[in-house]
Length: 432
Ligand SMILES: Nc1nc2c(c(=O)[nH]1)N[C@H]1C(S)=C(S)[C@@H](COP(=O)(O)O)O[C@H]1N2
Ligand SMILES: [Mo]
Image (cartoon, rainbow, N blue to C red):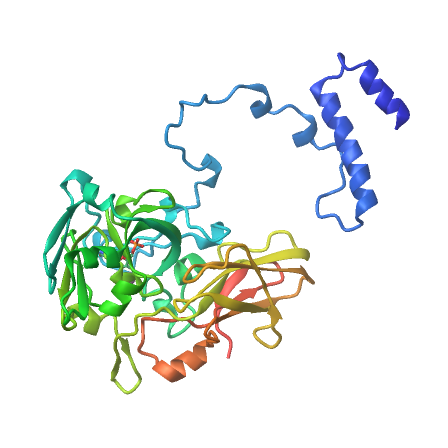
């Protein structure tokens, strides 16, 4: 050691970058071996990616003005929204899915938030956008975007889940990837105005019981929302993750209905009509209603119940490193509030271990969980089970089918099983 130190000091001028890298790599290897016998990284051997000068070490890159609005690295090109072509007839009234197997933490980046539109993306210049409040109010009002910016604002992180998330999985395991089975969800920090400030500004009549928000897109998306919810935690927002809403997410204005199904979160929001009873919506009875086994319907099931999914490993994210140290990662959420606990099983639900919920635990937001373990290399049946602050437990698929029958599409919050084979390949399966 002593002589090496001396060499370095004496010959500093002559020491090339390559020599320096070889030198420190050797030292690093020695120190690492002394600290831990079970290092994940390989013991340092002459590694060309460390010892050889690479292009990105040698040539100067783009300057600061080359990328005025930054995009992810070119090597992340597969981290994109994807659709399932056979699901809907055309892309204007369709859906795509968030690549949740490629993300981490709890925030969904704006560019990969799944999209659901009934008649395409409305492109609205903010100076031409208006929000009207009318119906059972003392004075009907029309706001410009500038007007809205003068109300007190708040920021909150909430998940939005489409009621159809997992709908294709009711009858059995269908789609090979959590992007497709669970990707009709995103979780962003919204900034906007508590809806109650706008309703109070217009003045609610005593018989004001329901709210009908309407979108400016050709679908004239409308939904009935009970006044208690509207006055409680709904927001009229213009920012997501700090920047303007993306056109796909309703630019310049959208409604946020925390914990409730996505179809009520009206995008391109242009009107709030106040009424004394619920409006009848064609979609509400034909689509966004859960049909029960006896043919009756479960209406007004707006809250998204407790749910979770393992995002890694999963079919699009196989285990490539073989046996040994393994990180299981996943997402959990509940429209009723916070997630209290997440359990994971690697043997198809026979044994459960508590997962580690990491980072922020926010109400009606995604939660991130991890389970760090040593994989013995044998096949696994991985499951996660979330429990929310109301004590509600995520059901098995069979329990859910017993309660709702086979004909449902919406509100599938069942436990998901991934079969991890001994070669690390992962498949969507059901076990009974
Ligand atoms: N104006 C309008 N709002 C809308 C829709 C729409 O088609 N038009 N789709 C709804 C549905 S069904 C869902 S699931 C969410 C999807 O929001 P996202 O596109 O931000 O993911 O928006 C809702 N709001
Ligand atoms: Mo939806």
